[in-house]
Image (cartoon, rainbow, N blue to C red; front, top):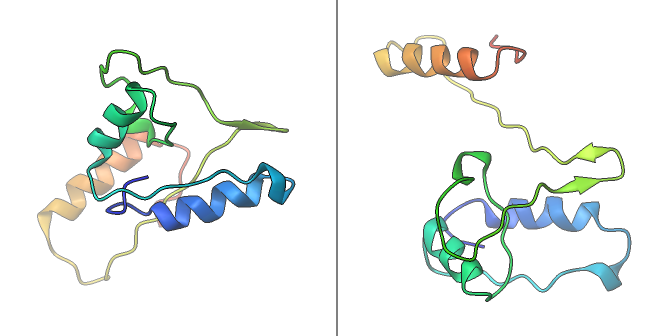
Length: 108
């Protein structure tokens, strides 16, 4: 896992899904980008967890698999928080993008 992303949070989520300590994976954190992590996985140097937005990058030898648990696909939700008085025009565009991409989400 890249140490630049929320690797420690993902590590906690991953280990919480495992039943026993014997199943606990050996996790290495690298001082590289997510793209470099994918490259390392494509060279057979381990596996990695990706954001859905990273799926589809073309690395020779890289195979994508959906993570599933006993009840189906494993998904991690994200939340966004902002100040009520935020007048940055990028916020409106960002909220519009979220509403289009995730129409069932609550944008309150």
